[in-house]
Image (cartoon, rainbow, N blue to C red; front, top):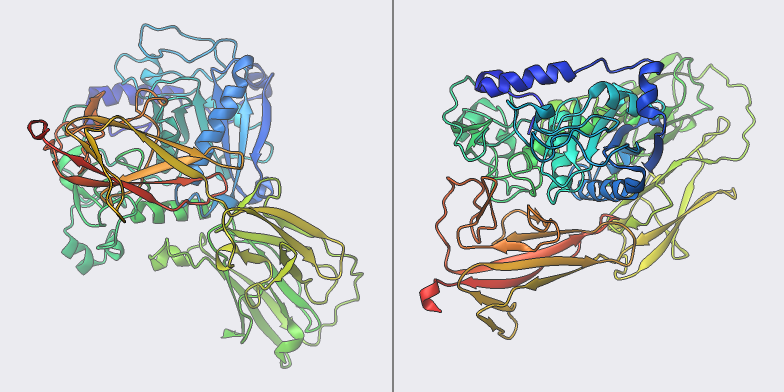
Length: 635
């Protein structure tokens, strides 16, 4: 859901927008204004991947948590973050993001108007409230925050500002709710709350629109009557028109959607049931629980990368370089794959650099006069297909130097090289991760080499780039942990990581079936003639929240969260689904999201798969069982 809706939708929207305008107070408060909010606040680093000014900073604020409930806030933050890291592109670009928790002990527990307008107004630091700020003209699930106070609390994270951070305010509540705008909000303890957070960040960071085909729950949204939407993931065009005009998501058409089905053209979105189309049957911006589809993922990849600079440091460019120098660049390091570096002299590629982060200029045989050397850093991710996005500063950066062989560099003391940045060593890394180690560049000679060992055995890096080690390319025995080490050659400097190569183990528990069928070489089959429940559980030998997922008949993977009204209750499958607050959950077979979706029971055999994603990012192998749903009379 978005914080600010389209005003033409109804008088309800106008009232909500007016309220939010009132709440949109200046972002920077005076010291005197900040004191009541921040006097007892504590900033806790949850994840530190680099300097504040060189990272995208996610600042999570807690409201309505008393001093005794701060451990609850910490648990809510951990769950929200681990769910976020299970979703692309956050999983692959986790290393671009610092996470900070700002603990704000509250005089009272809970937030305003929760769950109803007549419920208590509580004394809390950020004045969070349901019903759009206790507004009778709003809706219950619209959860607002005093933006002036939220900004004051976020300002406690030194070095963060609106350009390099995203604020997420969590309310101490089990009621469903949230909002997306400059400040994202979510309830901390609702069954669905950890999925509200990435949805709202999709609004706040990616400027993605809702794909709901309704505004008021239980009421179809009617027919869209506007022109071609500016929204990247909504259109009036047919698939043929998208291809012919090379517009919208034409590059992704026909692909298997990450959120199930294929990328195509599905009617409904932007609060309209008819007359406008979206890329996938369901996705993060339509149905909480599914991933972003490829179209949304491309937008979010650019949005995250726009918050950082692929080039973190480089040889100074202020004066010409002599050919006795080594030029170098330090880059970012996505968890999902290393960046490319291409060197050129006077526009021509320098051969055999193989993505090296440094270049010994003595090998270039530079002629007399001034020459131009460039290093272009590019993200080769297959999350992006639009050349304009690929060529934007988000995914491509170039550094230029003037090289002149007549320049002689004064001798500089070399000293011992040290590590200047690296993958966090205090938590296990996943077996599919890219681990990195950057070094200083003392003196004017060649950049120091980084040498890697796994369980004491030398490991070769890719040609040219010894700063990144892609664990997914190693024959890493699973089921246990390993020790990875990096050492700067010729020095005593070293780092060590624990590599978690053991995925979390998932299990399921079903309610009693009519009968159970076991056939040799086939998954176990359970027969039901009506509703049944499924509880998924996961165990890991490492700390951290484990995310469980399931999918039905090969549809998109869906994050298991219990049941919408109770995180501790199992998922409930029924022939036609269960209506919970005018949304439909648990229809066995083709998903049904809103009451007007097809409710026809699918009396046949269904395949249910389940898997785990642990805190290190390991995705466990999918396992499956069969469920046959029969009409009651065939009992």
